[in-house]
Image (spheres, rainbow over the protein chains, first blue to last red):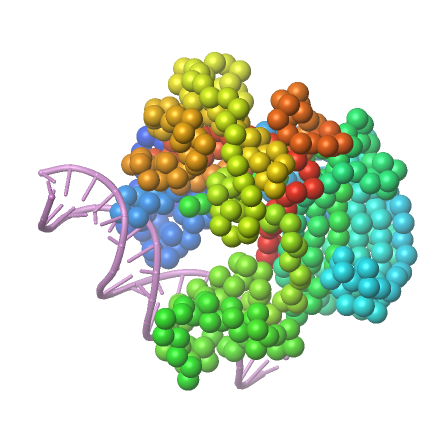
Length: 240
Length: 240
DNA sequence: CGCGATTTGTACGTATGTATT
DNA sequence: TAATACATACGTACAAATCGC
């Protein structure tokens, strides 16, 4: 019946959910009727619904249908969906937040046993070791401690680091970022954290550790992002 | 060639990756040859590979093949994949960690405006309000502050809370847990945290906030899990 | 309580698109 | 440019869970 023309099926369905056309009191139309409406295959409909489901808007139940979840109000704080913190760039675009990067340290090192144990780089590999402070809303909010494999990510310099190393990789290197494995923990603040971060009365930091791999399966980065309490939220949706 | 018999294709492929039969120097056999080996459809092979990919063991590249990622050593600490912290039960089974639950508070309340704003339950709904302390390795490690919709999760009592409310829901109620939306943040420790947790010199806690929904789309739970620093790791894998 | 009817989940086969080599 | 290999899309069939009669 209705025509999607430009908009994707996913976007159209999402709009209907957030507008309340599809709401908690009802279920989505069956896949069969959406197929009839949009004149596409079952595959396409299921793909769109999966996307809604991954966002936590709906939930599919075998034998029953697709249920709309009660909506929870979203918080106003700096809201990270984990995928984005790597290049805090995105924050800048999306929300109007003042952001600056300060290069606190920039050197080249060779991996020794200690560093190998920590970063999981092999001993002997040359690295760029960079420390950067991210100022957000006039606070020193994040301390990034980066190690890049200099063979895989060559020719970094402070100017590049001041901008975005990820942008540099994407634009100038013939290498693709494939996977990032992350660990998030809370740690007692260290000397270096007190030096660079506006911790206020807090004596702890969040520590997000990232291991990044290219599409040859090789690890090219180890990074610790130390961030101050009370300013960051990490979201996740778990389906059963 | 090889026969899978009992084992799933996923398990067989995973074993080959961790054993190093498939390793960083090579790529996985093509989907075509795996189809020939296991005598199943392309769909089945792709499903197994997707599972490996979701675990961060391999990465598929269009036109190239399926790449094995360099392996990163796993840490020994209490390692949570976010899905499990809800029922800390699972920790008990997997690792040998001593665990006890202490009921610190148990009452029934009606949602007022403040509580509604915080929990996103509607005003007037009756709730069970429970505070529990989780002792892990002889430390008060987690303070759980639970609110359950008493209409959807009726007849909770302290004995049930001492065990596992999720087990109770699954076994005794005709309700299915569908989705949990989570937020993780770091907060300055509160009076109640100092009372119940072994914070040591730390003055911050992790706060994992959960909104849980049943398969009718209704929110049945709001929970804050306050946990001490240095003892928990949250893992996540991001694919590009 | 059981038995269809409904609805989503899984699986297969095939064809075409697209990035890599 | 051609061959290779994964990604996307369609159609079909059957399995499994749910719901109403």
